[in-house]
Length: 227
Length: 234
Image (cartoon, rainbow over all chains, first blue to last red; front, side, top):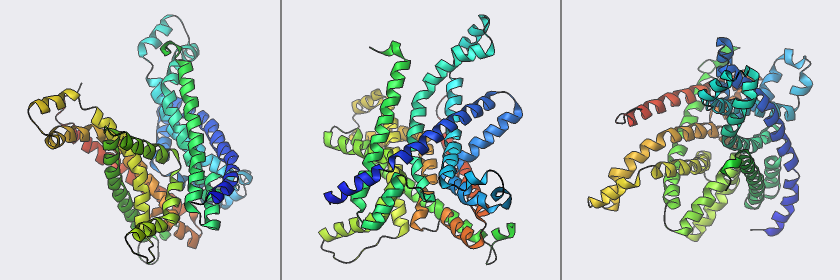
């Protein structure tokens, strides 16, 4: 074990943290919107919407993220129509391709989490709200959403941590986030273990922090459980 | 365009199918290795020894907390050195380079094992303790209790969770393509490089993965039905 190598690698790896967090944050925010839409479409009762959301979830949960990233980054550029379209400045950038792939991936998983949360709301509560004269939106805002969010939170926390780990795949399309930098340092110095330990520790710190934040949110949302 | 997927020397169909077979082989081998790690991990987590519990806790926390790609890089770049160090203890001084298949299976097996540990631990704990007491009262030894009471029920309780671990393992094998093992992603990468049709080949790869995951969902559903055949439904 070479301590000097570890000390040298630490600041270089730390420089990749902002990019990792950026990728995760952007993908999570956009993915949450997509997931909510997908979950609502799935529960809408409209046949077509239901089919579409089902197919989307099936495809993105059934294939590895690596395939999705490569399809978007390498695959889309194959078509002249896309290369000449207004979207090309975005789809040309590995950064945006990674964000889009992560967003689509997390959207599929999160939509199932949200659907589970919404379906966990007891039907009697919704009926009671209707009996009180609440409209659809008011029922959703006051009754369904709070209970569903509380139910879905632990699973959602897991999904965010999975996304932090998944963001490492962005290094396969040239992005230099923590894993990308780790790979580069390993190739330069052959210090496999030193770099692995430092990079692994950085990811563990990020994930522990996120897990603690989710636990805090859980506690805040269930004040009556608190001792 | 689709003739590029033909079988034989004119197309890439047989190469991709070979890649799918390799993916399946790696996935099965790593899943089984993961079950070994998982059983050992669960046994350690449930043991009375503080040391064993600590080791298992560190294993599952670290492996589940860092990216799979990092674990694969560690074993791919560092696996040879590790083996050489171990061989050095036994007096062997030659050069050792493990092949890509072994590295991949060990890497994905380690990851799969961390998830299996939690699943198996939960399943063992959901066997009611009264049954074990009853078995002891009947005069069964530890081994007999394991074989007759714990193992059959653990298997049944663990099946849904292990199905999830299998799907994860199957998808994680795509990451071994960075070690140039000829599985689906690697073949798709080579094919799209030489034909300049990346969308076609990565799309085909996606379809192959979908087939594999869908097929395994069906297999696990059947296995669960079989395992639950003696249980009354609510």
